[in-house]
Each structure stands twice: as C-alpha cells, then as structure tokens.
Image 1 (cartoon, rainbow, N blue to C red):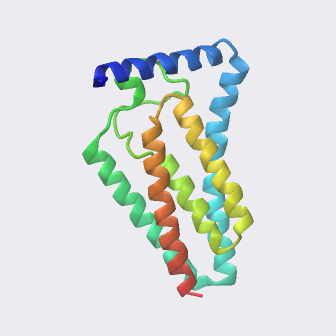
Image 2 (cartoon, helix red, strand yellow):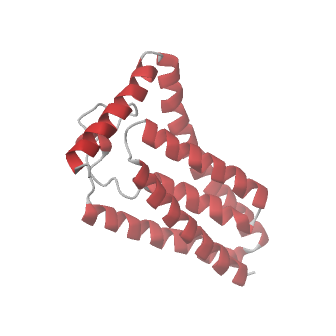
Length: 177
C-alpha cells in the first residue's frame, strides 16, 4: 500500500506537469485565473437574481432561500476552521496557479459549496438556469483544482454539501408557495 508521503509526492508531480503547461502559455494561465474570478462573480449575481425573482413572484420563499443557505454556509465555515485541512500548495510545496493568500481551511471548498447550493436553489425558479449553473459550478470546481488551491476531495465534499443544502432549500421553498 502506498503511504501518505508517496501519495502527496505523486499528486505534486501530477500537478506540476499540468501547471508547467499553463505556465508555458501565459494566455492560458490568465484565462484560468479570469475564469475562476468570473465564475465566482457569476454565482454572486445568480444568487441575487434568484432572490429578486422570488421576491417579485413568491416573497415567502425568500425565508428558506436566504436562511437555509446562510446557516449551512456558516456551519461549513465553522467546520473548515475546526478541521483546518491544508491546501494543496501547503502539502505539496508548490506555487498555485491561482494566487491565494493564507493557509488551511481547504476542506470542504466553500466556492464549490456555494456554487452548487445556488445552482440547486435555482430549480425553484428555472430548471434550465439551474442546469446551466450546475455546469458552471463544475467548471469553477475544476478551476480551483487546476489552480492548485483545492484538492479534488475538497471540491467533491463542497459540491455534495451544496447540493444537499440546495435540495433542502428547494423543498422548503416549495412549501412556502
């Protein structure tokens, strides 16, 4: 069985191979950084748009749409602080492609949690928007891993927590119609 040090070394080697390709192509590297930022901003806007749409059509739905994700985000944040998992660039001693200050608090990814929660919540208003946002959430997760600021497990855990939160929010919002 391969030990933890060997797994970390293998991950670092695979990451550096992918990162080297992007470092050799500055436009691709810049595209990754911009995609990470734009996708993050997309979800801020998508959540605000969802709250606005529901405020106009079904104002009572704002209670679960705002409350449940806020509580879950707080719980995820507390868990991350307590668990304090190191980030890939800490464990593997490389420079991430996506600049980030700070250490720890990698598991689960709040970017993935938020993106998947918001995408799932959108099923209340529009399935087609929700599906499009799910695709964008997956792309954001991929950017975070490729950028070296999260391990794949961080993204998967954040995505699952986000989908469960979004599903609970969706169910509660339907009861408020």
